[in-house]
Image (tube, rainbow over all chains, first blue to last red; front, side, top):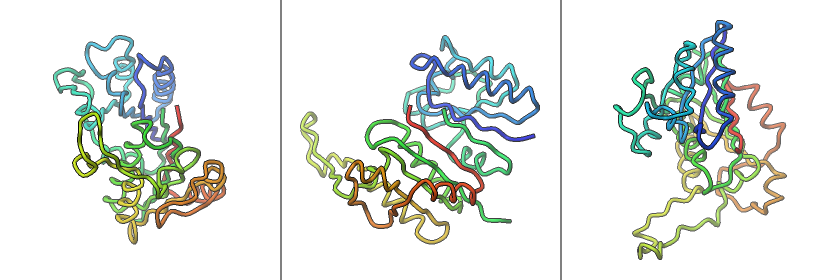
Length: 109
Length: 135
């Protein structure tokens, strides 16, 4: 079992290929791996409850851990009550902790 | 416990995408955690450390250079190199061919010149490698 960290910097409105992260992350999770998707930059726009075309709910349904970068949320004025409560607010420090875990593969999108 | 090392490849030119800021944040956080960091700057990212970058005034707002405090990427790189000058250590390597193509030869102190072989060596010696591509 390996750890996979997807860093999603794109939002689903500008970049239709964000489904790549959903498909790959869900597939890796089904194979028994630990999978985290870390939303950063415009990627956090998908974390909002009202965001249409967001794949975040499907990621959560597949057991993938979804984290949202606090700095990116703050920059975009997204308040805690605006995003899905199953998404945890996180930080770049935590991302670094994830990246230096043993047996971890990191994928930037 | 073995020392940890993170290698990051960046490719975006300065002043274009939020990705540069995120990469700087990751490098800063890792160094502050005592993690060694290698940065391999490829393609447009070799210009992040160009010495001739200069802050400017903002004629739209009517502010002076001093009031504007316009940040340059070379100063961010310089600050990171200062944090990572001993242990933990930051190695910043610009792709030589990318430098020559862009004429980005004059860079701040501490930035080295290298090539893909250096990136391969960095990656094989690191706990993990993160490649941040252009869009």
